Image (cartoon, rainbow, N blue to C red):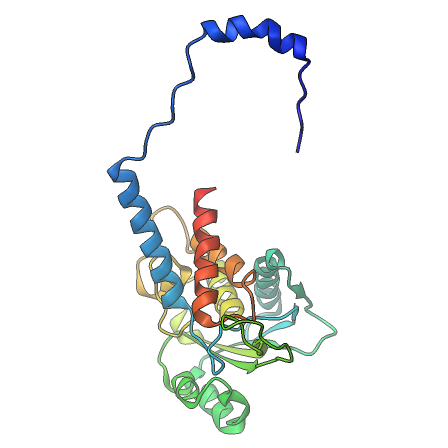
Length: 269
């Protein structure tokens, strides 16, 4: 921050000139229209955060802790590499370390023409492991007909004693994430569009029914934008930044408020 120091004599010499000049125009007072716009924006942000986030068993929102190791199978090696790199590019501003080799895959993305059969197979093979976020979520993962389905394995963490009623002793974070893409339902989408969608899913673990028009999560439910392909929106990026800046020990309500505050600040920049 620069500090500008002006000599006292220079200030005295400019006093007369300054007095002769008209005073600076006052900033216009907020109009009723401005207030309405801000109120609607606030409401839209809160609705977005509520529609995308889903609290886990501890009553908190989970996220990746420090590192991810994405692996993509079921498509051409060069395409898989592109998707993994795109996930890494989205994760980089979130201060997550990304490794694509020499690590145990914690984020597995599978593209298959038998998405339902594979999801059911995983659910029967690892019923206890995949039930960390509840049986209902596992059932939805196994039986949904959506083009992309996902499920996370969450570690509640913990070990820190709360010092107020607003904090908790748990710090939930993802141990693993499984994303299954139905190859029969993605024919009309480019690899770039699908990669952005998967990146949002794998990094945020959004509510399965989240389809807000302001997000790429609505990609399968609306026409392609007239100005170009589907991509992560500014709202998506702002949400992810807020998710990874929130206090992991707070309750879901406080965490959502923190994310919304970040999104409001980002929208006014």
